[in-house]
Length: 293
Length: 168
Ligand SMILES: Cc1cc2nc3c(=O)[nH]c(=O)nc-3n(C[C@H](O)[C@H](O)[C@H](O)COP(=O)(O)OP(=O)(O)OC[C@H]3O[C@@H](n4cnc5c(N)ncnc54)[C@H](O)[C@@H]3O)c2cc1C
Ligand code: FES
Ligand code: FES
Figure: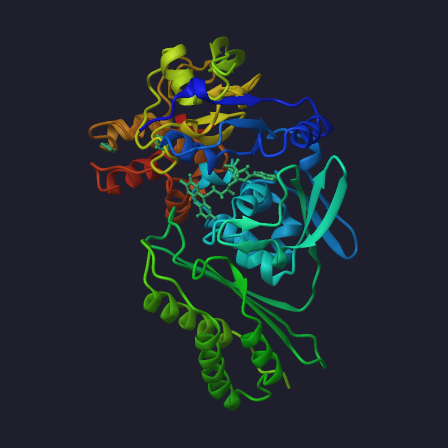
């Protein structure tokens, strides 16, 4: 059933400080509204229980892409299309470039924002695995100031996050890396415009002369997107020196991942399917890595 | 107080227009009901089908997902503006010619959206004759059609890439 329009309210703050002041004086009453690609779907189907919205789309303080020697930071309102158009972001963070290209289709990429994807906290959010393996940090801002948190600490449980009702996500901060091998694969029902059944990001930092470091993260398999730290540890510790060792290494990693994750069954897929696909993607990722002599 | 309305002023297909609406009215409804531009269609109402595709400030978006308040002062182009804009005189756009000539439309519900997505691709490509089939597939990935089976649509867009009337 369609929503009853007059029961909703949306206001446009003049500035970020106006928005933050309102969020503070009436905590939990006003919900931020960015590109609307999650909220409008609920609204349209009559499932949007929240009634009062504050339009943050257009607030310049939540926009823009900045870089320094060690980090690149982009505003929460950065859309997928804006990410795709930024050569530096695409070159240094190809997983997030790829996940952007595979998020909805062009019209969604023109409106959907990273801040919205993060705050919406769906376990199937396609930017999550990339943000996790890149060790993203998130700046949360309120009228009291701002705090920088690790994205890996952001999710508390299914759709539960550390974001307080009077806070906004201001930006996403990524550490710049070199000599990194990036891998991303999203598996859904069809190639375009599908919600993930399994979403996999893999990273290998292979600096010559150093022990390689592997990072992997999975979206859509559990209640929250998560890093697979046990499997990562095994991968990094026993990284093969010669090609011959690779098969056993991959085999061991698959056993470890089977122990580590507990995929769910829901309307999109089953536990068995999700486990098998996760293992296939892990194998595919590891296949692409070169032994480190 | 929640049944309040606001005055939205916007440029639609080159003309100054305005509407007095609730701030969360869907842009799709503003176009179809307030401005009587019914070329833009509603399929799903949830961003999946692309029938409601239009341009906001030159970017392709689903008008069913945009609240009116977010287009205050924006420049909008709809399917009606694709042929009637000064740029093309009264002639059809090359993409429209191609859909007519190569059977790209059957029932026609998806057609305005398909054409907007194809026009977006072609007008944002320096030399449309270099557009690949893959690029067409990506450009139209957000548009569903239940009639044509897509082949005729792809063919029409491929042809359009080579028609002089498609160039921006
Ligand atoms: C057809 C379709 C296809 C889609 N495909 C995909 C897909 O493939 N992969 C995927 O991951 N998602 C997909 N989505 C979901 C959606 O597009 C993304 O999650 C998008 O990034 C949401 O951003 P938004 O700005 O539109 O969020 P909004 O709808 O504006 O907001 C979403 C939530 O985030 C909160 N919020 C927004 N910005 C902030 C902020 N700065 N600070 C605090 N809270 C904030 C809002 O209060 C709300 O709770 C799809 C949606 C549609 C309609
Ligand atoms: S009606 Fe807007 S995408 Fe289907
Ligand atoms: S022509 Fe009927 S839906 Fe495409």
